[in-house]
Length: 347
Image (cartoon, rainbow, N blue to C red; front, side):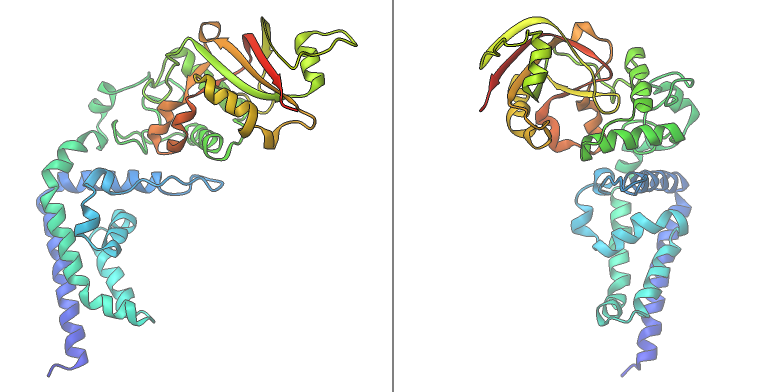
């Protein structure tokens, strides 16, 4: 009967052999190695903190195939995704050594099965190699590819590609410091309802006006947009330009020119859906409405009256705000004049 030492040596040899097998796979196909490194680098940037708690989850299955989760052990996937860029195939040997010396029985038991699970990753990488190389070729940095796929001139605010560090549909281009800050501002706005600072709203406004990065920074297709708000009696008097003693009708509508200026930051939310605007004037907005706000108001504006409007649906392709698509949001990057308002008193 083999001793524990002999068993441990056999397990070690099995893991070492699998690590060498993985190394040989990439030694034989350095192009595949480069593609894999670029993919994992993108996944790492998309799934790590950019600052202030910003976190985007981009599953590895998005590029390698969803069946990787069925064919490869989750622990192997985690090591592949998190440590391969830094340590290459040796990342798996480092991980195995930690497991084999771990304090928990689960880790030590798993270390004995590790070679088999690592083999499943090797088999999977071989199986999907041609598909991954073909589908992810655009992710490998290449100056010619970058120029051919450019969404803007190199002198544009976000250079040639918007958020090229994390997108899978364009060539890789490292984010600039400004690019990361714009990304974070957009994330905070979409996911945490934080105002977009005026300095970054100005950058986005320049992008929209120039028509740069149109896959991400999309222009609204609809001609009419709406904004729902809860407004106080004093606010209504100013909007309707009523004299002292004049009564505000409980329900009504009025045409005119009503300037809506962002109160916090450099942008305000509108929508192409009248139903959504009505919801914001009733349910969604009540929690943060001014004290005494009793009038449910919907402003109506034309997209022809501003060049500073952004359709948010293009930004959802970056991985955040997917559950907000139904809001059909349009971002006004500055003041916008509504040509009509409707209201009702909900008291």
